[in-house]
Image (cartoon, rainbow, N blue to C red; front, side, top):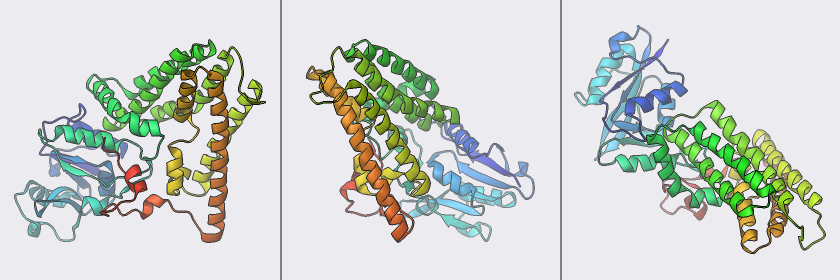
Length: 400
């Protein structure tokens, strides 16, 4: 049995440089649907057809789950009534269901046995990959709401649990740069490649004692590290290679920067009996230990990761001794004219962060042994509540 896709009622409005057909083609390709037809008659008997109105913006989760549920019609509540927007039905039923989706017939004329779903019932509200609560959307595409839809797509591409710089400083400028890249055909991998160049430049500058210029290159790199991922998501161009490329740079660059920073110091006056050699080793051991703890927790205890277990863990991710918080420490130390104290602060904060994560891992193991499998606090959030907690407001979808 083959699942075909049939698109109709297309909108001329482009979002992030993509037509509705281009966006849906990319989404469906990711979901292993590459057979497109223009009429129901083009499908063989026994096949199913995914019917999609092209004048609506679909959350990828809705399409993914609709593919898994043949015999389903997706509806959207509008102005007190239900508008049928998409469906996954047998080829033999497709023509009558298209009439329903186009509004030329009513629910009573559809084939028996079909079920109705809404975005709320078809898609989950918890996005594990992006560590946030974000109810699935299904929105009409019009010229009037083009900008709001693009903002919605961009906000949807953002992680809920991340560091404070990425979460609160970068979103607005990143949206501007992401738009520029999307409209000028600049790919996410090209942005990541520029990030790699800046990683190398920052390292050389740190090593030569040019800390101010090195920090400028480093901060631009961290900004571009935000842009490439958002660009990939809003243009549906994520790839396995791009993901590995991006994460490899993120993983390797911070400790090498700290090493170069230390080598660039003309003197080491940390204000305590700690040699430069010891500082290097503490940073590397602490950094690697923290990453290992995160990996063990995710693989053995809770697949969402250690930072999504309890609200305290999500809050701690804002300031965990990783790249951006540590760059803040280095920047502050340079402003007071003591770059050596910056490296000392990075050393102590990296070690302290890893110790905290280790204790959280041990706590998770204890809970697993005494009370059973761990559960992310995100799964217990009611997205419809009128009085969300501070943590829910902080780590739900950032609609910047």
